[in-house]
Length: 260
Image (cartoon, rainbow, N blue to C red; front, side, top):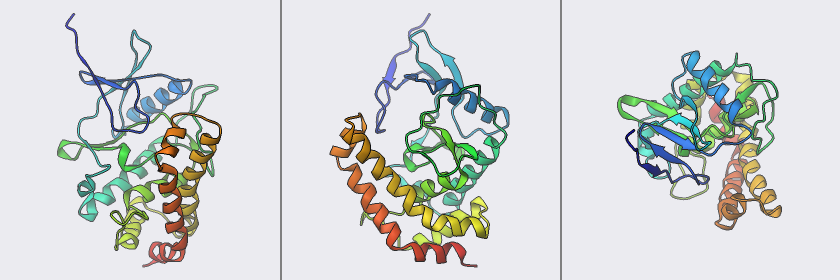
């Protein structure tokens, strides 16, 4: 049998032990893996293709997933989301996922990796829909990766997090957008949020962002890795600054979301 070289895949905050082998990705498993594989299998069975497909467990006990070719948007490829129609496509992908997962029945006693308790539990949400998990491939073949933290949540919980990353809603001078309000509305329109959902979303934007800061802070207090290292590297400060930026402009976001 021909030996296929393993190529370490780096770039994420939690990527230790993740390798590419040919057209597959091999990753360490956890108690959540059976539930995540059931979720990904369901998505492909109902026609949602913007996610890796699970291929089982290899002889080293690692999960095997199809490799998704392309470029990850984060940190320096935000041009892939221009013009605005491409941002709208992200929102439609999120909506397509949420519609596809609506009828998913988890396996008995699933052990989801719940890092941050969500507000609501109507679906199994991705929980990390962000530019660092969106791969843009050739011929506009786009896919979300890193489903390990999928867990019960709500549509709006996922949407709020996605808006923070993809608009983006950032305190960082190099990432702030003067057209952030317009992009929020484009995202909301493409996803198909109704008026009630838009009213709920405006305050949720800040709470969802702050939850990331609080999670890193609490995990650091407990000495848990890799979160303590990320906190030491300043990730907590980034999430706090972004949360404050979003919270201070809540009325602006609400007006943008509700503009006709």
